[in-house]
Length: 334
Ligand code: DOR
Ligand code: ZN
Image (cartoon, rainbow, N blue to C red; front, side):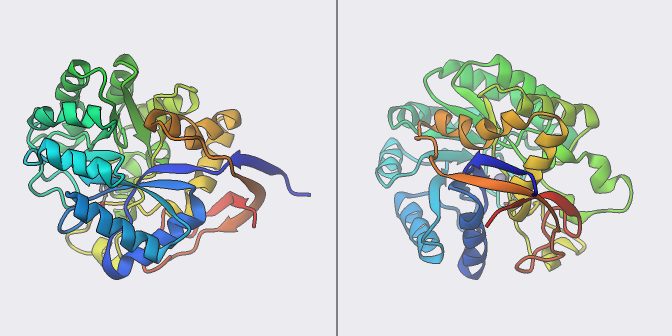
């Protein structure tokens, strides 16, 4: 009999589902793997208003009726308190701040987090979470996350009743800072940042399917991320940042940033936590701490993993998934 491992059905607090003809592919994949997903708004045009959130939600549910999407809007300085009020009314749970030019479709982003400061009382009043892509524009790429921490800390400390999530942390410095800041601050950690370093991306041959923002950093950073994920500290929970780009947009002269980890996310996490003898920490990391921070009920369903090696397909829906062609030890039963 193969060994089994039962977990609560996972949430993913950071996904990209894209739009138009791509949306059904990724939304259905998300429904297969996760109880709830927090959907990022970096579309063209971005999801910014209550009407846009409602329309995007409808398109997602039409594509994947079984999915439970949690909606995020692009939080930009030109929104008003009344916009925020309307966004809360249609059920958005978070606003995402994009610094200018640091990632996919972050044009017209902010230069400084303080530029959205006037909207924080409204965010707090409506119990909306402020999600931050934590990289400072205009800084050398490996130093962008650390450079963002100063303004992030200032703003988060000045608004102790507003909840902030530092998304996809990639450095030891960010882990340390999130741990030090108040209970209003948490961070998501991706599967790929727990596994790869910059060496995997560019240390040998260039591996475009591992190129993402923020770029994977040093082994010491990865070590700090692992420690945080395995620690049982509720400030750190799972957000995959699953970010599909079709093969031709990755394997070209100017490739897009993003790792498509959705098809292997839970199985990959199982491997990482198992290898670290941290099995008992995985449940809260994927289905507990995030829900608690967002003020959502924890999921009541379960999933069972079975130790039964399988090979990740080379291509899923036109995209090369994370760990393509590799063998994973755990498979989701059923
Ligand atoms: O690598 C990334 N890809 N990082 C992000 O922050 C955005 C994402 C995307 O949308 O492609
Ligand atoms: Zn993202």
